[in-house]
Length: 289
Image (cartoon, rainbow, N blue to C red; front, side):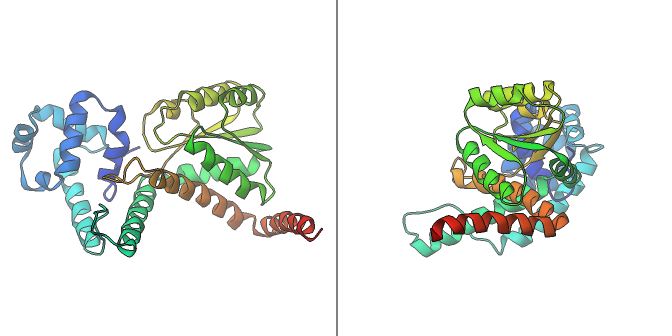
């Protein structure tokens, strides 16, 4: 994935865990003081970051830029745009003096940032292909452990209601067994925000070996789960004090999966409505009895 104007900082954040020690040092400095780059020359930046000029240029190329000048120009455009947007936003850090309404507004701001970051990081060509393979699949499986397993279960509920043959599994032994029984007509979505879930990654690896189409939903580019996926969807995550809170991760994941759901309905509107009505009717029949 290459960074373009508008998502450079988000891309650096998503790549961070896969960078070398020196690259992480550069990335941390950029993320903490992005304005510094617009004010300094390459030699000044190299001195400030305590790295060689050639090292910094290689970092720029890792992000998909020709060199420092190209990177600096695009980052300046991004920063100018974000400064305009930030004037409309509240700080997300919660303090003891905040009342309930103020905290609610800060959480709303945090959620908005997560969604904006997700939109910036998503490869919409990949998304289009993912929707296509899901529509053609005979069976769809969602794998995830911990909170990602809860996300998988929620998505199963949505997709089942529009007539898709879908299941969600969060137990690693069941994931491995099911993956071993898959074939080329199956699609499996592995959900792991960190991208380092050994259980989910191993399950996708087994599924891929059995010719199933594998999809990874993660925040971290170049993480292990991306190496066993035919398609990769990158979700965002709020940086700052609230990071580590499950709300940011869960909203980012659900946003991408809801987007897939919406795109399927857009293409198959009549069938989706019919299937959804059937599922509603059968539940209502039981409630009346």
